Each structure stands twice: as structure tokens, then as C-alpha cells.
Image (cartoon, rainbow, N blue to C red; front, side):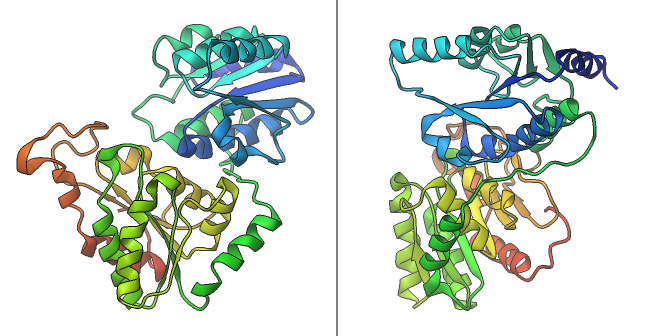
Length: 361
């Protein structure tokens, strides 16, 4: 066992009940979903503590009502200096005993320092000098470790065991009822959720290719549900138009769901086809197998865990480079998109839907 882990556990033991705990993880959606096992570990380790989570206000809905969480502290990243000062003052006055910084950036380091917590724990992935605000860094959380495994490592360190903890998303009965009603037109089919969006342009396999997959799935008798944000509605329209042209069954819910409703919809799906994005991780968290499309990111480092998923990687020299802007020009621009064909994705989808996946591709 690494020295840091032993030291952290000794300090956790010295804290006793740690009445006030904060998790600092403002963003992004997929990272928050993958970090939920840390919340579970803290609740198991400190059953009587008050646990708070500092999160971007637009993502707070995802955590609302989580049984292991007491308080959500919203962070307005677009707010002015007065908003930031008020947040830091609130963190300081809360008198936290333990803070876990899962973000590892300068702004989360400022938050961590503002708490004045007795024990402050960070991760090896931290940048911008963020770990200078922490007392200890959890070993086994570097960037060459899969993201989901990094968060499990933090959870294991807190809990003192190697139990694999869940990434629970608190979906209400009302959200499930809403999703069932919305997906009514797809009754009797294998429902395939599709998300053609992604924050980075280099992650965004073209919507026209998603449309080709959707048409093939429709012809095979599958129903299609499209998800995404309002800004991604044009991408969904490209897919929707193609599916309607062949008379396929379709529900376009892009821009029409809360985060909880999105989780409920994904929980109803048989499978999901998605770029590397937050909704992909949400689908995995609610138990829906995914066909993940990885162009500039690595399926090993950024993909969901488990044998039910089919993760497809680009085959170019710059694949998995994590470049937000394509470094290539001319005919080679976004060449990684071309190495993942609609036929390859549709074949993977058919395997997933049939339940025959035995390993991650």
C-alpha cells in the first residue's frame, strides 16, 4: 500500500466523525457522473456527517435528491467577482473538516483553501498548482489511469476497501413516468438513444453519419430517441429527417429534458450510440450499454467500465491526442472521423442490442 494512502487513512481516522465534508467537483457532466462513487464512499465511511457538493449551478439538478448528499452549493462560473467572493465566504463559514478536490484546477484550489478544512485531499491529475492547496494526493490517480478508475481509487482510499461502488443518479418516480410517456411511440421496439453532440468539435463524429446508423437501425426495426441540449438540436434534426424519410419510429427529445429526465430516458433505452460525452456516461451509470465513438479521446482512459459496452476508436496517428482543435489541414482534416464508418457503428450496435458483447472493443 502506498505511503500516501496510509497517511490519508491515518488522518481520516484522526478526524473521527468528520461532521462537515465537502466535495469540490463543479464540472463536467460526465466527470461528475463518474465521480459519484466518491460520494458513496464518504457516506459509508462517515454515516452521520453532513456532506456538501460544490457544483456548477447548471449541473446541480443531477445531484438534487441524492440520498448520500445533504447540501448542494451552486457555483456560478460566469458570475462576477462579488459572486465568487460570496461563494468563498460561504465555504469559509461552513467550517468543513474534510474537503476532497476532484477538479484539480486553480479555481477549485482557491475554493479548497477558502474552506480552511482540517484535511484536504486531491488527485494526481491536478493542474495549475491546485495540489498546493491539499494536504495529501491520492496515489493511482494520474492521467494514465482510466478516469472511472481514478475516482474509484479515491473512493477506495476513503473507505479502506476495494469494493466497487455505484455511480447512482437519483431519478424520481415522476421522471420515470415522464420518460415512459414520452417514449410511448417507440413501444414494442428495441429503443436506441443517440447523442450526436459533444463539447469539443474534435469529439463530434458527424451528424450525417449518425443519421446513416439511425436509418440502418430503423430498417432493422429499432426505435430511435434523440437526446442532447438545445444547442445540439440542429444535429438531432439531421438524424430525425433521415429516420422520418424511411418511415422509422422516432422521438426527438433533444433540448426537452432536465438532467434527471435524461437519465430516466436513457434508463429506458436498450442501447445508446454516442460520442464521448456526458450523456454517454449517464447511460452507462443507469445500466444501459453504449456504443461509444472515440475520435480524439481514448476509449481506455475516457470510456465507461464494463464488458457490455462497445467502444470504437479512431485509427489515425493523432487519435486519442485530446486535441480540441484538429491539428491536420487539407484532406486530412478530421481524418479520424473517416476511420469510424457508419457500417462499423451499426454492426457494433446490433451486437450490443443482441446482448452478445463479451469484451470492450
